[in-house]
Image 1 (tube, rainbow over the protein chains, first blue to last red):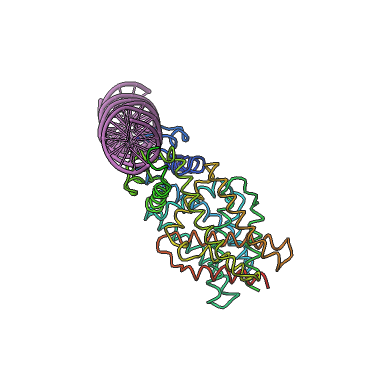
Image 2: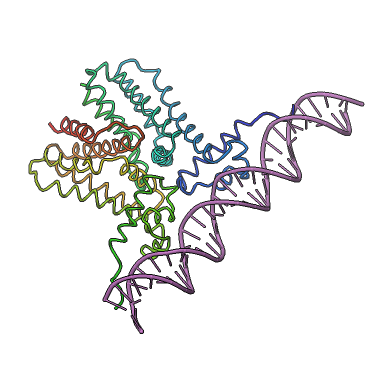
Length: 191
Length: 191
DNA sequence: TTTATTTGCACGAATGTGCAATAAAGATAT
DNA sequence: ATATCTTTATTGCACATTCGTGCAAATAAA
């Protein structure tokens, strides 16, 4: 055998550089050259590790999604009553390390690209349904089923909308404020 | 004098072709050649009428914005009581001709591009504030000021979030359903 | 004829991709 | 231990393509 197998850290390094470029330049102007420059590597690595730009972009979105989901499961274990579990689920979407303009901008590009790329579309759908069902599972304990579904859907929409607002230049929307706004709504619907 | 002056219809034709390309291919793959092909013209026209691609993109976004605002003012004149005026304002955002995947996708690209382009950012901000203030003006008649601002903000977020959902492939969200969901929320907050 | 409009191409710049060459890190043989 | 070999990792460039742009020519209306 020769050298050590494919370096997972190096893959992650390229993925991180990709996310940085997307939030800094946008999807349109994120080039292979810029990504590799940001990562301190030469352009050939992208094809060695990912086979092409499109695969890298999809992998970068998967990575971003994993990061957010990681926050979610971590914050769920503590609570037991429905309302505080709702609060925990929402809290993961407004975690100070997550609810930042850079991440919201990247996520916005993800939403915009998904309708044009079946792979991203599938990722978006899975993620949306998982989020909605997590909420739904708790709301069902507080409300009749037919109301619960609408409330879950409205809550997802409000969270997404606040992410849009946060992504824009000059947005004045601290994570705590956004979290409080959604919780105030959820509380008003579940009493 | 020579021929008739600059043809406004021709400008609009190019703008429409641009919007079609954005919703069909996305911002990243909307090229001057594709736009002009869609419009049935040659590439030179873009620079003759708009001076460059960037100006055209900005003009296309302005046009989209005008279309939506047109629906809004038209539907406001009828009503007089706050709740039905709220309903009218929201109805313009969920008008069957507006709340379609093609338009929602284009709007998503607008949101994603705005953080990278000062001109688009300014457009986004003006539009968001106008929408929020329109809602706020009615909500103030129903609620104390400090609550009213939060409710307006939450409503805008929910509308935006439903636009995201509508843009995705396979979304099952009729305009009437989306409208009803936001109105149900607004009603629950203003009674 | 005069002026406005439209065409179609050519040019330079930039991009994604593939590849040949090189370096690095075990493994193997001597 | 030392040298050699094998596999993996990384480089950096060349290639074909594509893009936005500008312009000279052509066309059409007044």
